[in-house]
Length: 92
Image (cartoon, rainbow, N blue to C red; front, side, top):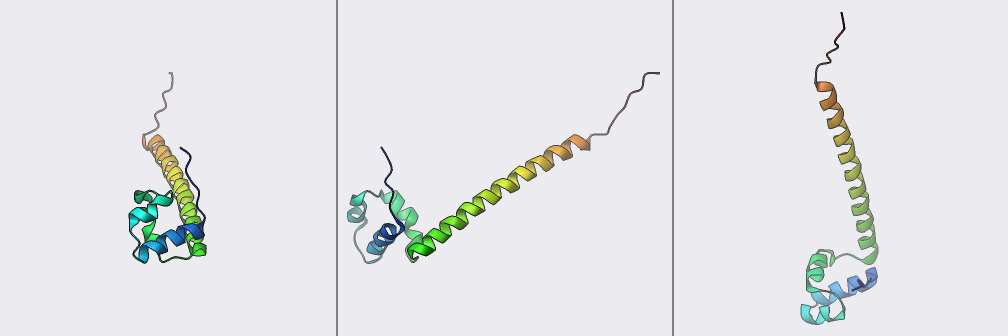
């Protein structure tokens, strides 16, 4: 089943309805699951532009964390490689 794409304004409207006391069961009849509603509820006080900016910051943070993890892995690999003493055997 294809996921529905809601605009930021639609998301803000649904969250605002929840703040006004509309039962979650009625809110979620429009195509949003209750799990999604409760996961997104932390954004209820935000306006759509703020939601968009937060999403951009989260994406940037995820990208930077991936870069940092890749660098850490490379550093660990190099340190393990050069941690062993170098032994050179000569044929005499």
